[in-house]
Image: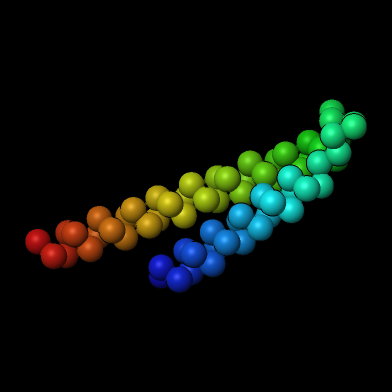
Length: 66
């Protein structure tokens, strides 16, 4: 499960980096930039969810050891 979390996190970071490079700074408030911003937020939310899943795994390990 841990490997899957790392793979999904890597994909989310790749999505974030790609969309940051696509933003047009000259026409900052265009509709395309809005779509890129949504994808960046989606990538960050995916990273947060993956972090929560890793913490959940650690808590389950501690619970089993007791």
